[in-house]
Length: 476
Image (cartoon, rainbow, N blue to C red; front, side, top):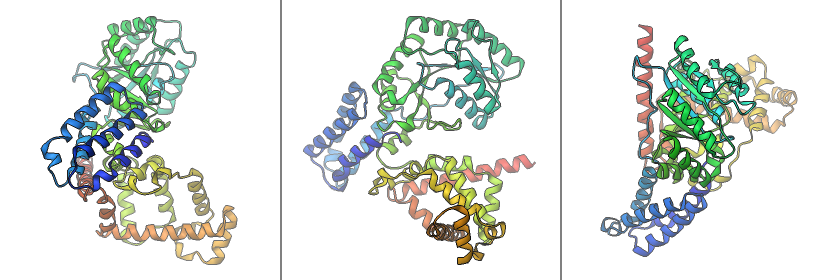
């Protein structure tokens, strides 16, 4: 998970300050020294660190903070605000062609190995699912032998067309012909996968400039590997200087515990980060929200992203059916397994837990690691039950449990534990379905005095209302 190292260092730096009422200049200087070291260890560009620390220190030395009864909290808020500003303040939307003047054309650029081709597929998949677009991908990387095959494989997996003319035609011709083909097929987005190099060279840049001149793209995305740290910033700066990129996509953010690239690129290039790759799957792709990322960095969780992920994975009609079963006390092991699958689709469980406000500060949560095999073992136990037993868990006598343990090759204690977890889950879900949200509100309210929890609950309510309106319109 990105920023784990930075989050831990900052939490240590602020732990004493949060508990204080009034803070002194000496307190601020001590904390900012720790913040500076934490940012440098996270591989944030040293110039960015210098300016950031200077700004925070100046704002924290004011009378409003030093004279306040909750100065420690105000310093943390200043850091949060400046982290958000450092990454762009607000989420910036992707640019589309004006109606009737399409198709929208995107160029994917970056060094070889940054994940550019896979990211082209992720972007196409995202635009189709979330923006209701009809994308086409264009294979214009003629130098890497496997690039064209890789893009075509991704296209088949996603059922999204890929235009290719092989590796003996110039990238400029492939790009222009690809746009013509997209128009003929009535595709409204063209994503051009351009060639990468192991390092920046003059030939690469000239070629990209030629493609840019020929297709006049609406966006030039620079795909950057977040795990390369400050090198990513140098790459971004060079590409921006030559091509005047419009946006950045950070890949492998899930694998970088430092996250320095995310905190440096915007400040150095003045170009927004619009998306992040958060895993290997083609749907592991999210818009970048500076404020939410700042919350994560400071250990405040990210409940809004968690809610959005849940809403993406849960079918609305199926959710209503599940709620009805809960109200009628008909929730069974089939539903339990279905919910487990949905949780797995949302991402690693340890990452999901850390998005809940307050959970980052729990002892040992940084070492939490859920083995996917544990989930597989639970499924094996359930699948060893008969259809009747899965639908009616009350039938699970000791004799039946021993049979299930033997059939699933698991210990009888694991079977007992799973059945207990199921009953607890059923009880909690039943209470929630009847309007008793006390447990949920308590969990969500564990962050900043319940404000984040209330915001999340309001967000859920608004989204559900919006979905119901859309559903009514579809029926009409």
